Image (tube, rainbow, N blue to C red; front, top):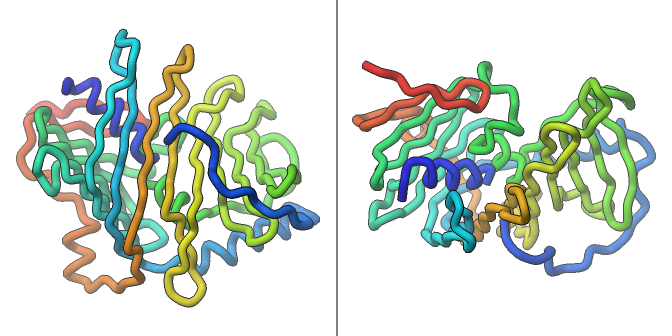
Length: 285
């Protein structure tokens, strides 16, 4: 697999898609009456987020350059999350339990790939505000697992608005031009996030995240065991990833465990990159 292909695949991951719609039909309930009410309800759900550890499986479907049919990959993963900002994902690729390592803490994120391309990416959140461009963002995975952060700043350009459609309350954030940047679809009955849309230029959807099969973790927290992400391509050439989690368990991290899981470890790689606003710049020694 070439460097370009591998990067394309990993940009889709975290973000962390699949074919078809979610399987269960959601009930319809009365929605919230205002943005403020909706934001409070989301905050209540996010406040319940707990530290977890889990195993799972990742299935990829992605297009390579001019090939007509998508490539497919499948491998097991291990995931650790310590809200609000710490996460680590290990992908067992090519018989290497840490063939792919993706992680983050409150200051930075990193991505290491050993098989074939020996490459390492690292960036600071302060230098990467464009989440639509930075598709490898652990922030999207954190949001998928219930750590959603929004502010109630009223209606209008560059702010949030609230609409109701069928079983969903939909929170929409617009940019300064009045075009959508992000939409969060919340089931109006339980206020769990069921879908997130990230928009690019001209208000076009670039990434769609769908969440389903919620499981109870502890007394008050629920986690989707099915995370599906689609990165929109041209002429229907969408890249897709499906992460299925199992054995999701609440946990606690010791200081030693946190230092091991949630701190970058560059090691020795053939290629090392710094990510700034979603663009990778190779560092030459």
